[in-house]
Length: 214
Image (cartoon, one colour):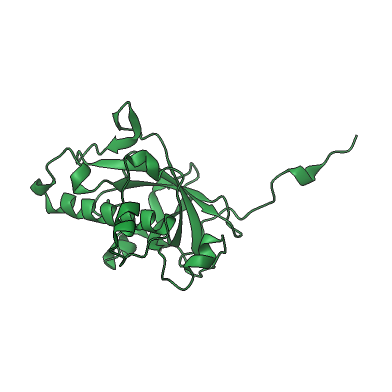
């Protein structure tokens, strides 16, 4: 009997993806550990803030790190919050960061230039429900830092990627990335506290809060 291993997946690098790399990323909505409503299990509510967020899985598409995944909570913009965010400037800031990230993901996935104010572009920035975010593919530059919230039993630290910035139409590498071309970066992981001290908030719109539920 012939055993055909050619049908199995190719070996791939385990990650994290080096910081500064540019890649196509797929966003998948997952069930939040603290869901706000049974009908929308992918929308969670922050236990300490009450802010609503999208629970997301990010997965690299193409290149030597294809399949590398991590999880992010993206705070929903102010217009989608049920909490009065005016109570706290940090909540307002988190909502702005999350709103910018979600807009950029939509623009990248739908090939909209950020500066385009035409009616066609504005229509592409609209969704009927957050579920439409599920499964989108967008171009991104990745960061990586030491996630001090996760260690295994031996005390080893696991590293986690994040979306440093979304790459949209108009960037010289946008078209290539959307064709699954991968551009390798060479940055080492950096500690979360050092990352924040450089005024570069981690992605997800929860700049001043640890990721809820992960």
